[in-house]
Image (cartoon, rainbow, N blue to C red; front, side, top):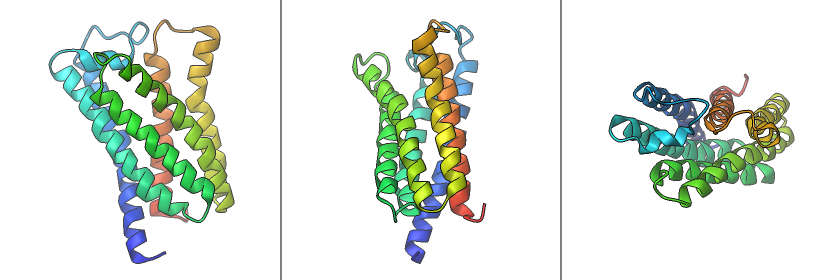
Length: 199
């Protein structure tokens, strides 16, 4: 790998670690700032239309973390998995997922139906991209990362599949949070592997 590609990959990896930390700091702080928030009866996106600091924190967190995760995809993942075509497809799919994440913050619930469409796009594209990336990791001889990525893809999709099958909560904050945590953990672990391939 050239020194330039190594630099870009490290920048992408750093962005992949920073994105989840920023996102969940903003989300948890937004929740704390709005005592009426209910994990059962609300969607996380409801925070994006609460006047004052709540909506600012929530939307800022999604927009900036989505941008950082986009950098993680187009620099980190794309370069790390550049030798396989599933790597190129998977990193592109993950990049588009994070453009959708940015759009969730830009087009809040007041922008219907755009907000709904970009939310669905994110929560569908993210697990799909992980399944594609798992093939890329396998072909690039990163077998542990491949197995881990498949597992996380299943965990990210499962809260939604269970919701559609059993309707276990009346709103979507719980599956949104669980799926988001799974994807975030994956991003941090893979970013650390990029910074230290021996992991």
